[in-house]
Image (cartoon, rainbow, N blue to C red; front, side, top):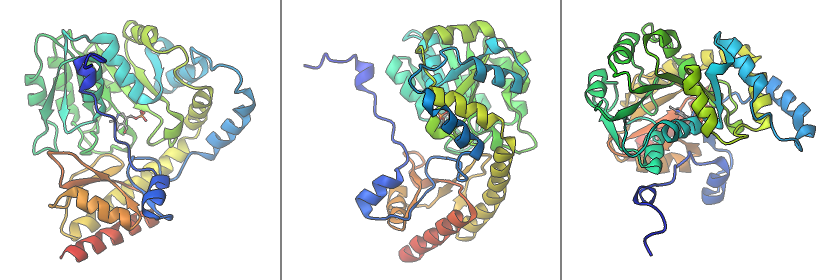
Length: 365
Ligand SMILES: Cc1ncc(COP(=O)(O)O)c(C=O)c1O
């Protein structure tokens, strides 16, 4: 019988996460590998987070605070916004899904870049929402005009990852401002700022500074990257109270765990931990980028905690060769299937990556 699921659900494909270290050990017998595949904080969580979690363990028989009052309170203070403008998600991933399910139907339409974060098309497909995936310039750089040109009368959502995953490109403040002004009133602009902490280009600006430009603007943030607690699954959205209110109505009752709430509060209280990582990342982004370019590889300009690198041959082969050398990176689908996305790690991890890349290139020379 082919009537089990609606056609849009039949089209869904599972998300492919970065290969876990344990899987590499099982499949390849490599035990001392480094994982540079999921844009995680290579310094680990803040010790303050670990201590706060340990202290909270004896309370696990209680449900979490469904309203996540304390964490929303801290986030509201952190950003200088009312609590009514903050909603939490089980990672920002859940919020992407929630935004699609809350605001769009199959009669609406979504716009996003390509290549960009794969969860935008995944969530739209699951919800049956039609979409346009708009090519980036040369597959790498944002094209604000092309995004605007893709907006139709039925368009309800525009997702912009800024900086973008997997290219690392940012949309400059002038372009972003232009897009936010030009969008029809109907469209909810969703600025996904998962990598915002790493952006240091002079023309970068968070959409938090542009909230006055349009009413329908949602900004997504996460604790998974710079804050180093991807395993706890905490993200949040900031937007107008009446927009956020609908997300609260649709979300699951206890969508962020008690440990997630405790850990995120503690992470917010350790800005030095984030600052250390951001400084390390900026140094390593420049150093590793230069080293890979010296090896003759094209490296896309990045404002994030990863580099997209062109090996000018099937990326999957290079990915496999690096796996055997104990370095896990991320292979990319077409149209960037000769590129690999490499998360920046600690200095020794990055040295190992550079040595492994050199070895793979030498073997293929
Ligand atoms: C652009 C972007 N948005 C959102 C996410 C989701 O992050 P999380 O669900 O861990 O908050 C990611 C993760 O890779 C991402 O790259």
